[in-house]
Image (cartoon, rainbow, N blue to C red; front, top):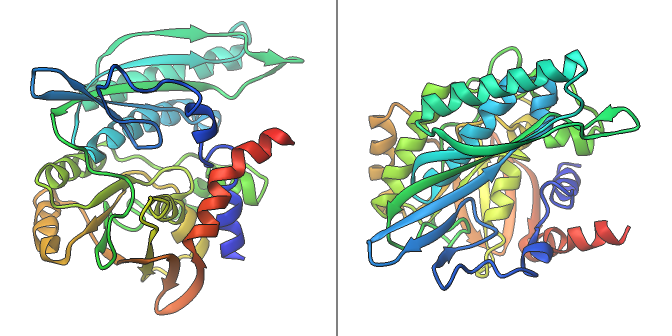
Length: 349
């Protein structure tokens, strides 16, 4: 069943590959695009400066529907985390605020809460809003859209090839920077109700968004930037929609067909679907050469961030184990084909 759940998530509209859309457009900016669509962050070189800029765009209407303030803060944090995966320091932000009819008190409340949440997070992560726009009255038959502040953040980095999202070679250790479920508490089930798993597999939505500790998030990002800028990671991918299982799958869909065996050990006896699909923030999946593992762990300790080893990269398959028991195992190629072709199938009806 867990394999079927992962397949359902990978084929869903929010998570599946968007290549069918972006390949129809010229996303190369005058030969300056170093990393384009399909990555955590796009990267563009700034000619003759030795510098580059990274850009990320995020927004989660489910989170903001349950808590507009917390959802907006999570969007900023995810953008900054995406930039950190390629080694960029967040520098500035923009936004597009999408809401229903503000003449209705509950919609105006959503709008105020989201704006205040954006302000809190942007001040904390040092990303001032340089501009943006607002789209209101988004309703059909009196039913408003989910409150959806979309955030774009730009970061600065030295000119170099950014660390890729995809696994690069077998035999690398998988490090989950930030920990298995940081901040997990007795509200874990309540905060699971905002996940893609709840939406797609359970067909429901409840509770609250994942809990964000902004100080811990900032330390995770700082550790990630230090690790990737020192060339200690072969790949880096943040955990967001779909949690650990989806992030491991997406990192397996590179041209080399490198998959992973993920080994989880839960002393708290959390259910397997929580460990696989919970969307707790402040987590980045790294693949690391064994000889670099000690240096990576040292940087994580320096920033007081958890960095458990959760498996290794392997050729051609994706497997998950919990406390020594195999949950499921699947070949990468058919899983990648499912993810790659899902959008066209959805559009075809």
